[in-house]
Image (cartoon, rainbow over all chains, first blue to last red; front, side, top):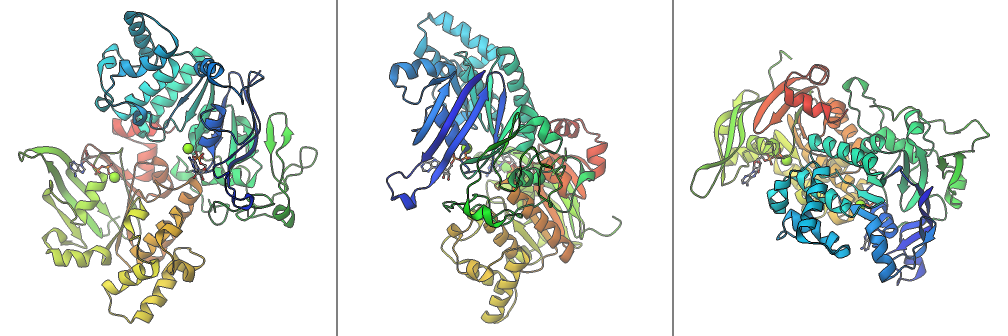
Length: 337
Length: 263
Ligand SMILES: Nc1ncnc2c1ncn2[C@@H]1O[C@H](COP(=O)(O)OP(=O)(O)O)[C@@H](O)[C@H]1O
Ligand SMILES: Nc1ncnc2c1ncn2[C@@H]1O[C@H](COP(=O)(O)OP(=O)(O)O)[C@@H](O)[C@H]1O
Ligand SMILES: [Mg+2]
Ligand SMILES: [Mg+2]
């Protein structure tokens, strides 16, 4: 079942500027998130991941396009409708700690969203808080602590508890472990995985870290300058079927975890992202090692190459052909770990 | 490895004190590290374990309430902790260069890049302005920047993070240092740019034969770059070894825990 669907979703932060100066942080995104799956969203910082997810959660004004939740168009939802929806769709931020009121105890932090929806006795609130803390692996005693008395990992657990206390169906995890130390990172990722299967959650898992994404996600959407360039099942990534040159470059740039698998050439693109460059062609063409004339003049559409695999690249001829026409990248290049 | 190390840190201790003069944090607590010519030595550990304070101690840049309590920093056998402030200024940037995590913070925002580079060259060599300019251009090319003339005329805000980090590396390479200390040089950068900068560091190390002390919290960077590895925890080195030894046959439980977190 489609839990979330976006249709032509776009975001322009400078709508008031003349048309030629408008910059789209997200442009024309068509994305489907199935109930029960974890969809990864990867791309370099600034490519529009947070903006896209905030539009899906209706935390950001939508410039154009639609968001459907269980088939229902929620784009125009206001107050009452939105309030009901809020319970079902939640977000865990990179730095949950910084969004906490420092003068609130953990109990108050977690009770806040709860009190918005359910009027209960104090002891009932307390019970719910203790329950959700237990789910995220924190003892009851943490309920009385202030954010400053928590470690980074514990704060992130409280952030997760706060997101889960209303029993949502859909949770956006926006770089949930990026600010955590390695040993803690593993614990929090494991926790998120367990909670998902226990509670039957659906995740949109945002990260610039491909290894975390490969570990957590069923499908991965790769974003470049506001557009989705490839949506690919995890197994396809693992068996070297990534097709978009940008995805291949990202995979190749990922660091190995085995010093015997170092490779000389890891850089499979040129230059750096230049923001605000508008182009009639493929947005990646100026960094692509394989660009052809058509790439400068026409935008490639996101096309299915397989049941669950979509690519937006002129150089890829679709599933009838021999697959990728690209000569350069070794398709297994990214599989270092 | 029998060669003498270019940089040897011996029993280094750097503490921070509270207002009453008691030890508040033993940030570096008896550290020994050897950095060899033409090799990359990684110092790896989680944030707060004392990596940056180790490198600042080597460079003599510890300020109050911190203090280097004991230890030696031997540069080609000479204990530079005995150097005067003036002498240390000569050591920094000439014999030991440094690259930090945040290039925007390390570069001067109101001076053009060309100026900052020339200054770095002129700081330890008496050459003409014209010669300094020529060398600046060559340095920028050497660190993989395409349009050096344009970069020379730019301010930092006009450059991307990856370009700024390359400029930092160019400045660090200006004196042909025997040791480069790189403290989380790619932590703030995107994956593809990180790969480029690491590739660049490797190439420069090979060309110049300098010893590199690479500080990182990222085991991926270690696996990709290091020859020798020191694992640090709470101010102490808990394990050292070749990169293969550390990854394939870790002995200390903390090293095992770190490695467990990435597999
Ligand atoms: N509130 C805002 N106003 C103007 N521009 C913004 C705002 N938020 C984000 N942007 C711009 O939109 C682009 C996408 O940002 P973001 O969605 O945060 O990217 P990501 O999460 O992938 O790092 C960036 O270029 C960013 O500068
Ligand atoms: N100016 C300071 N005053 C007090 N403690 C400090 C200061 N700078 C660093 N420390 C402490 O020294 C320890 C090591 O810090 P640092 O070397 O920066 O860690 P990292 O390994 O992340 O680079 C930390 O516990 C930190 O809190
Ligand atoms: Mg973001
Ligand atoms: Mg540090």
